Length: 421
Ligand SMILES: NC(=O)C1=CN([C@@H]2O[C@H](COP(=O)(O)OP(=O)(O)OC[C@H]3O[C@@H](n4cnc5c(N)ncnc54)[C@H](OP(=O)(O)O)[C@@H]3O)[C@@H](O)[C@H]2O)C=CC1
Ligand SMILES: CC(=O)C(=O)O
Ligand SMILES: [Mg+2]
Image (cartoon, rainbow, N blue to C red; front, side, top):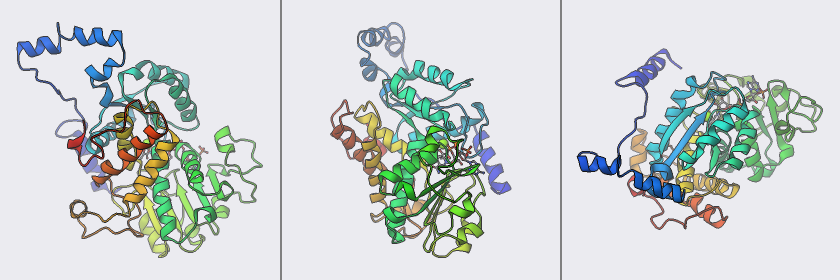
C-alpha cells in the first residue's frame, strides 16, 4: 500500500468522528408520551410478551434485522493473529457493508477468549439477541469446531464468513473464469496456497461445483498436503493426495488454476510462468495478494487475474456474499444457512456477471462499460442488482430445502434498499 493510501486510511477512520458505524433510533422519542411507550412503563408490555413466547422478540425488538459480527482476532485478513481489539476496524467494516448493501443492522463483538471453548460459550450465551451470527477472521483449525458447536447450540443461523462467504464468491468467479478460459471444471488442475478456513471451504465448494478432488493440490507452510504426511489435522487430511509434488514450485507446473488464500507475496512470476496456457489466478489474500496484478499481468497475457481488493478488476471478496445471503436468510427466518442456500448464491452471483451492466453502475466505477470477459468475471460490490439476485435465490433455496420458518417473501425480488421490510 502506498504511504498516501496508508495516511488516508488512518484519517478516514479517525475523522471527523472515530470509527465507521453508529446506532440510530427508529421510533419517535420526542415527547413524554413517547418515552412512556419506549421506556417505563410501556416497555414492560413487550417484555411480558417475549417472556411468554420468545418468538415475540422478532415482533417487538430489532432482533430480526440484527446480525452479530463476532471475532477473536486470530486471523485478521492476512495479517495474522493480532488479537480481538485490533480486529475491530474490520468488524466495523463488515457492519458497514451489511448495512450499506443489504440494510442489515450489526453489532460488532470482539471476544477476548483464552480458548475455543470460552469463545463458544460467550457466543452461545448472547446468540438469542440476534437474528444471525456472522463469525469473522477466526483461524483454522479452531474455526471449524467453533462453527460446528455454535450451529448446534444456537437457535439462529451461524455462518463463518471466511469459510462460506469466501467459498461462494470464489466458486462463482471460478466457474465463470473457467468458462472464459475454455476449461472444464472436471479437467482443471487446481493449486490452492493456504490450507486454513478460506482454503478448506473454497476447495470443498469447488468440488461440489465439479472440480475433481484428485486434481487439487493444497499447500500449507510445510508444503504440499500429500498422503505421506503424518502432521495433518482432520481438515487438511481430506485434501491429502497421492503425489510426488512437495512444494508450490512442483505443484504449479502445468496447473490451470491458482487460488491464494494464504498471505502476501507468496507466488512468484517464475511460478506463474510454469502454469498451463490460459491460466486463472485468484490471489485473494488481503490486503496484499499472493502476487500483484501488475507483476502477474506483465508475466502472462493469457491470464485471468483476480484479487480480494477493491482497486483492481475482478474483486473476488466475500463482500459479494455475506450481506445478501443474510438478507435472504433473515427474510424467511431460516434456521440455518445450508448447502442448498450456498449453491443458490453461487449461481445467482455467477449469472449476474453475464447480465448487461446498467450505466449507473459503470458510472460508479468511472468506466464506459463492463462486459462479461477476462476483466469482468464477477459483479461489482456496488451493483445494486446483487440485492435483487442473491437474497431471492437464497430465500427460495431455504424454502425449498425446508429450513425457512416464513414463506418466500411477497415483496421479493428486492430492487433497492428501500424495498426492505
Ligand atoms: N478475498 C476474500 O474474500 C478473502 C480472503 N481471505 C484471505 O485468505 C487468507 C487466509 O485467511 P483464513 O483462511 O481466514 O486464515 P487461516 O489462518 O485460517 O489460514 C491461513 C492459511 O494460510 C497458510 N499460510 C500462511 N502463510 C503461508 C505460507 N508462507 N505458505 C503456505 N501457506 C501459508 C496457513 O498455513 P498453515 O496451515 O501451515 O499455518 C494456513 O493454512 C488471508 O490472507 C485472508 O485475507 C480470507 C477470507 C476471505
Ligand atoms: C475479506 C475477508 O474476510 C478477509 O480477507 O478475511
Ligand atoms: Mg475475513
